[in-house]
Image (tube, rainbow, N blue to C red):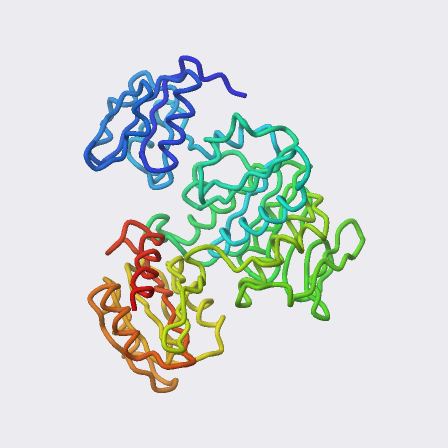
Length: 455
């Protein structure tokens, strides 16, 4: 592992990742200056009070780079920040907690990215891995862009453990290291408010493959054109996943069975009916996790154990409760229109849709068309509500549906409750981010569940 004694590190951003990295570096002898644009009274810094850290709050001044050896950016800090650009000009290395973790982990790392489904796939693979090591001294560590930052557990991770790591485009855009096994689930326009162009977004995602070696493994969706288009980046072994049979190594579905081809052998893994997750997109997630599990040497019995009883991750098509015969679902993670499309397509029942939030400069046309075909009542809320309403008015065709405008989430829930009938699905799948009203999608989802439980 790297020796941090006396290394002068500047950490920008004191949210979850920044705090974990600050603690790790300080406890290993680095001299850390931690900076955040928020003031001290806006930050929960108590958990760092036992450490000797220099804080620079309310700004990221250029003097932070004086005598700095390393600049680390948290996920919310853009890679083109002027201070980061200045650091590169001065020859100061720019990295993040994920990069440092990959460089120092003793255990093999499976990295997962994609525009949608990466958290569900990561959790599924973690469940499969834990089933595989049950009764042994091995451990499976799951984290990265979800849950606990893995840098916080680096000292406890052993060589024969397994690490499953979710990686976002924000993390990957900085990185010059790739996991030994890496998956790209899908690629659709997302976070263009941050990356500006689809090409830049795709380039960030491709970093999960760019630094692999000949002995490493890549897993790609062969049914997502953009993800499959990255196969030329693969340095070593290629596995793929998809529903339809194919030539090559990976997973597919035939006669109601999920199957794996690996090393020239075909293995029946488990029946599709064992999957509790709703929607064709979640079948893709299961196929991806199974391909990754096969690459990691996990047996079919453990894969089945990971799939059975798994009903999803919080805020991802999460069933909340039944009210007056209508089932309410929380898909607050749907922060892009295509995720809302996938959520709607997961149901055959009449849908009352709550949509809105803050737009990320994405294309809403497919969702607008689907709303006119599949939604019975639409409740619009948040900053993007007028924009969505305008797009709907300019579209043509479809079937009649009713619509309500709401000022915020609370009013939207009340409006949905008034129109929902027995047999309906009431679905929060906004299509936009939460930042117009909440700190993140999880806070929005938690508030939604609170409001629904209060009906």
